[in-house]
Length: 358
Ligand code: PMP
Image (cartoon, rainbow, N blue to C red; front, top):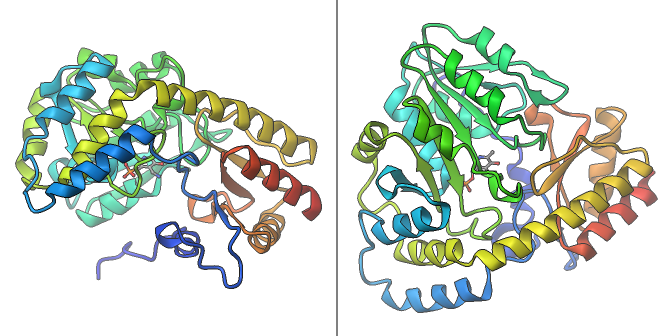
């Protein structure tokens, strides 16, 4: 086995709640707040589309995803020819590493960056390189300083996971300008829909030849279990990625559901508004209990405790109350817990439990 291919942190929390079922013995009233899922699930419209699509599972799905790409292009005002769809945005990240990085190359991201960047870099034999953040926020100067002539991909999630922080368009453009010739800046917009009016970096993709944007249906659209994501990139990069994409990478249920979800803009708006409301409420209530967090732009907050021991003890206490949150030691933030913004009752349970813990 190659060095770096180690067990992944966070799997334990997922194992406690597989397939929507609580696995904590003797406890049924369990809320999973560890994977940044939409607490309201997929919209009614999407669920109906899924039921209908299930009738044609004996047919192979579309290979070019034309209808889903057209829907995404229409709703977001993009060029359908520059869209590629994958099995979650995870697969787009994997494709990018497979196509553009290999042994001897470097894949750069930030110290509290999404774990998939490191996993994908290792999978292709490239060297993962981590740049420091400043106050748990992506630091463009640190990223530029960490670039070498071997840097092939630079991943930045904006908003960032697990910190929830965001950097502005000018900073992103400065990064795109400063990375080495031939390197690609990947803007991971998994949480972009939670930021009103934010295009996830789409305009920058259209203005440059070295910027790619990734997006997902796993968060605000409530389709994490179906695994659909997409990328927006200059046409030459799309052509390369399509050469390594399997022809039937997405199921017909996933394609139909994602198309209906992206068109259901009223539902997306409702979920964004509710997330903004409960995120502010929970962050403030926890801060009053001595558990601060940075302003989050995603559907989660990164709650900071005095030290790793306190975070660990609070996590254990929350689990005993049926509240599964995410430990962030694997993200080099052992004194924190990442808590997904649930529905109002879940947020109230979290605050009550932290109050009791304190
Ligand atoms: N990027 C970021 C920053 C994420 O947090 C996640 C999911 N946790 C993903 C990408 C992957 O999402 P998916 O593969 O479900 O589309």
